[in-house]
View 1 (tube, one colour):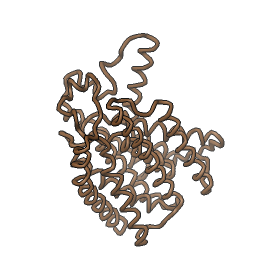
View 2: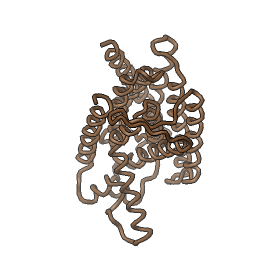
View 3: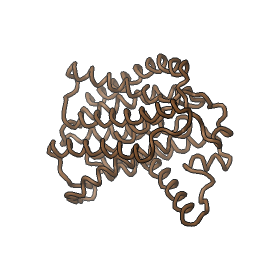
Amino acid sequence: MYQLTRGVLALMIGFILSIITGVILVPFLRKFKVSQTLSTYLEKRHKEKAGTPTMGGLIFIIPTIISIIILLVLKKIEYSSNLFIVIFVFLAYALLGLVDDLLIIKRKNNVGLTEFQKLAGQLFIALIFFLIYMKSGAETTLEIYTLGIEIDFKWFYGIFILFMLVASSNAVNITDGLDGLAGGLSLIAFLTFALISANSRAIPGTESIAVFCFVLVGSLLGFLAFNSRPAKVFMGDTGSLALGGTLATIAIITKHELTFIFVSGVFIFETLVCLIQIISMVYFHKKVFLMTPFHHHLEKLGWNERDIVVVFWCIGLLLSMAAIVFGVWY
């Protein structure tokens, strides 16, 4: 009961602070025209969104960090190397996304960091995470508790970690294309890992990570007040890269890498659709989908944006419930 009460309190703190941050930040971003140019198709389909401020990820990033610092100072949560890793990845990927967003705004087009620059930044952050994680005494094993399987990846574990962080951050970034879509799915995902972390007490620092997740869930809930259709602000790469990288980090630290596949099912699907489209265009010169990511394919088919978001949220929720049953109950 104490753990549940602490989680609810953390969620409430994150929500209140994010609402306050949003009320202050959104008018500021709008005043200084911190917005990005939409693609040709999106201009036609989403013309009412032109001029909407970006970098809204700060609405949930700032409150989350402030809340965790306050809780650490008041000694309401314990500091650990694992909590440090989560905060580091969260801030580092947010900073990388912030640079990308600022370049896009400065150039007044959709060209920020090059693909190589962004990938290099993601890999560098993931590498630092791996080094700190290994130094803290982590094992190079992939454990599937439900099936009683334990696989020692040895040196390959480093490559596995790099892949997870880069793939996850890009997957959330790809999914961030409709009002409330990536924000809502991330809220569901982090709530799931909050519950998983709270039940992973054998691993040092997971109770504090659970609180971090609850604070972030509350902050994302506050963010959705500004990002749900019609969106008053977009999270931008600042938010999407931070969410994706942190989600993978928590899955690795809590030893729930396989559960992560369930929780991130929608993000993974959206990414696979893009890969299929690219391969088909390069090798067969044909489109498999009308447009990628898949949510834009559905729009082309005539689906309403709000309906797409709700359906994706429901799928994400079902997958996350399955993940809790698989990763915690069994």
